[in-house]
Image (cartoon, rainbow, N blue to C red):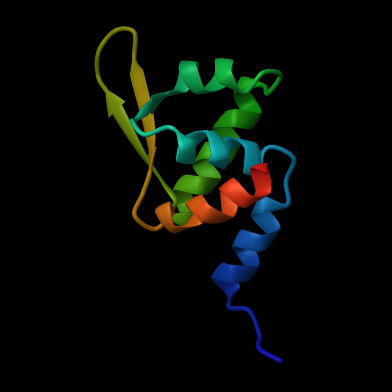
Amino acid sequence: MSHMTFKQFDFVNFVSGKWAIPVLYRLIVTVMDVRFGVLKRSMGSITQKELTKQLRAFESLGLVQRTVYPEMPLQVEYRVTALGAPLKPTQHSLAD
Protein backbone atom coordinates (compact mmCIF):
# COMPACT_ATOMS: atom_id res chain seq x y z
CA MET A 1 0.00 0.00 0.00
CA SER A 2 1.44 3.36 -0.97
CA HIS A 3 1.32 6.33 1.33
CA MET A 4 0.25 9.77 0.25
CA THR A 5 2.71 12.59 0.59
CA PHE A 6 1.74 15.57 2.71
CA LYS A 7 0.98 17.63 -0.42
CA GLN A 8 -1.31 14.87 -1.76
CA PHE A 9 -3.06 14.57 1.60
CA ASP A 10 -3.42 18.34 1.79
CA PHE A 11 -4.93 18.44 -1.71
CA VAL A 12 -7.38 15.58 -1.03
CA ASN A 13 -8.57 17.31 2.14
CA PHE A 14 -8.89 20.59 0.29
CA VAL A 15 -11.01 19.35 -2.64
CA SER A 16 -13.43 17.70 -0.26
CA GLY A 17 -14.82 21.16 0.60
CA LYS A 18 -18.22 22.24 -0.74
CA TRP A 19 -16.95 24.87 -3.18
CA ALA A 20 -13.51 23.56 -4.10
CA ILE A 21 -14.48 21.45 -7.10
CA PRO A 22 -17.00 23.93 -8.58
CA VAL A 23 -14.52 26.82 -8.32
CA LEU A 24 -11.66 24.81 -9.79
CA TYR A 25 -13.93 23.56 -12.57
CA ARG A 26 -14.92 27.13 -13.53
CA LEU A 27 -11.27 28.15 -13.68
CA ILE A 28 -10.24 25.11 -15.71
CA VAL A 29 -12.99 25.34 -18.36
CA THR A 30 -12.41 29.06 -18.86
CA VAL A 31 -9.67 29.45 -21.45
CA MET A 32 -8.69 32.98 -20.46
CA ASP A 33 -7.93 34.75 -17.19
CA VAL A 34 -11.05 35.26 -15.06
CA ARG A 35 -11.78 38.38 -13.05
CA PHE A 36 -12.88 37.83 -9.47
CA GLY A 37 -16.27 39.48 -9.98
CA VAL A 38 -17.04 37.47 -13.11
CA LEU A 39 -16.07 34.26 -11.34
CA LYS A 40 -18.25 35.13 -8.34
CA ARG A 41 -21.28 35.88 -10.51
CA SER A 42 -20.83 32.61 -12.40
CA MET A 43 -20.77 30.63 -9.13
CA GLY A 44 -24.26 31.54 -7.97
CA SER A 45 -24.69 31.54 -4.20
CA ILE A 46 -21.04 31.45 -3.10
CA THR A 47 -20.11 34.30 -0.77
CA GLN A 48 -17.21 36.64 -1.47
CA LYS A 49 -15.50 35.36 1.69
CA GLU A 50 -15.80 31.71 0.66
CA LEU A 51 -14.64 32.36 -2.91
CA THR A 52 -11.63 34.29 -1.62
CA LYS A 53 -10.82 31.44 0.77
CA GLN A 54 -11.00 28.85 -2.03
CA LEU A 55 -8.89 30.91 -4.42
CA ARG A 56 -6.22 31.58 -1.78
CA ALA A 57 -6.05 27.87 -0.98
CA PHE A 58 -5.65 27.01 -4.68
CA GLU A 59 -2.97 29.68 -4.94
CA SER A 60 -1.09 28.26 -1.94
CA LEU A 61 -1.14 24.80 -3.57
CA GLY A 62 0.25 26.31 -6.77
CA LEU A 63 -2.84 25.44 -8.83
CA VAL A 64 -3.94 29.01 -9.50
CA GLN A 65 -2.06 32.21 -10.31
CA ARG A 66 -3.43 35.53 -9.06
CA THR A 67 -2.68 38.74 -10.93
CA VAL A 68 -3.52 42.16 -9.47
CA TYR A 69 -3.81 45.18 -11.75
CA PRO A 70 -3.27 48.41 -9.76
CA GLU A 71 -6.04 50.46 -11.29
CA MET A 72 -9.23 51.87 -9.89
CA PRO A 73 -11.27 49.93 -9.25
CA LEU A 74 -8.72 47.26 -8.40
CA GLN A 75 -8.76 44.39 -10.92
CA VAL A 76 -7.82 40.86 -9.82
CA GLU A 77 -7.65 37.97 -12.28
CA TYR A 78 -7.08 34.26 -11.80
CA ARG A 79 -5.82 31.55 -14.09
CA VAL A 80 -4.97 27.88 -13.72
CA THR A 81 -1.22 27.25 -13.61
CA ALA A 82 0.73 24.54 -15.42
CA LEU A 83 0.50 22.54 -12.18
CA GLY A 84 -3.30 22.78 -12.18
CA ALA A 85 -3.82 22.16 -15.91
CA PRO A 86 -3.43 18.34 -15.68
CA LEU A 87 -6.56 18.30 -13.48
CA LYS A 88 -8.69 19.23 -16.51
CA PRO A 89 -9.60 15.62 -17.49
CA THR A 90 -10.46 14.83 -13.87
CA GLN A 91 -12.71 17.87 -13.61
CA HIS A 92 -14.48 17.02 -16.86
CA SER A 93 -15.17 13.46 -15.68
CA LEU A 94 -16.59 14.78 -12.40
CA ALA A 95 -18.87 17.15 -14.32
CA ASP A 96 -20.33 14.35 -16.47
